[in-house]
Amino acid sequence: SLGDPEKDDRPYAGWFYGGIGLIQDTDHRRLDHLELLVGIIGPTAFAETTQNDWHQYIGVDDAFGWDHQLHDEPGLMLTYERKYRFLAEMGNGFGVDFIPEAGATVGNVMTYAQVGGMLRIGRNLQADYGPARMRPNLSGTTYFTERDMVGRFGFYLFAGAQGRAVARNIFLDGNSFRDSRDVDSEALVADLTGGISF
Image 1 (cartoon, rainbow, N blue to C red):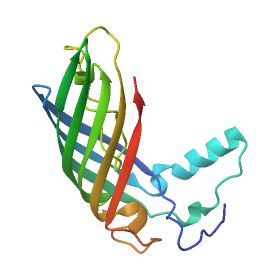
Image 2 (cartoon, rainbow, N blue to C red):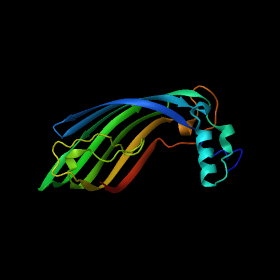
Image 3 (cartoon, rainbow, N blue to C red):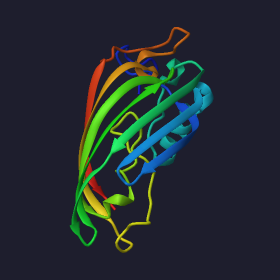
Image 4 (cartoon, rainbow, N blue to C red):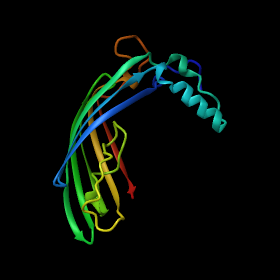
């Protein structure tokens, strides 16, 4: 890679963070999720070391653009999401459900509002509200419950979409309080996703 990346390349950046979340499931029909992520963006996140050590391990050239990464900055994101589940049961644990969702995230890392939905068909759908996904993709959670499962095995096919109105994304817009690399960003974005989950 280039030692001085092109000006229209995303800024090099790493984010080292931890978080805490609260989840409330209401009668398998509604899931509320509040999450706080706190960490550090910039050289202190050790993304350069992580990437280049991995590159050495797999026999790939080092990435040389890290001298132009985002500067150190504390990072914070507070997210609230609500999901609803509309389930049509077909017997023996099989069913089809639709899960619309809406939420918002605020912070210096990302600030955006989101709406979306996921359609699933499979078995033991009530065990979760979709596959866990990293933000800012179509959101999922690590929430899982076995209490109403039929047998110990579940699976589903899923397809979903999410739209976001984005006010800030530090990985595109650059540092909040210091001059840094940045690229043009879009205010309205969308994702489509699909697959199978076991």
